[in-house]
Image 1 (cartoon, rainbow, N blue to C red):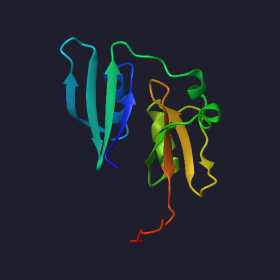
Image 2: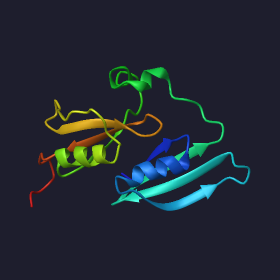
Image 3: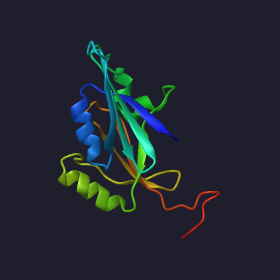
Length: 138
């Protein structure tokens, strides 16, 4: 994968939020008329591309809850893999980014929890210790 693109309401706020996960800004661009600003953030080999339009449109109400968003066709969320789900949750709670959230065990065999970014975009934090086809241990 090369990148994930998100539209956000405030570029600075979103850059700060994603910095808490290790994403660092590597590129910024702004339209001369101020209609659009773009920032690309990098973590390991993945870019997170943030679009901030002066005339943005809010997400539909169905996207506010996971249960109503999953059946709707389209991209739902993106996940970040961590080595220790409990430690990640505690770190995010200490940073004020996760409240009363519990780690869940998914149907696909991973442990996970969801948080929302400043615009309500779902971000899944996962601990995936499975050895997937084509991967080698150690």
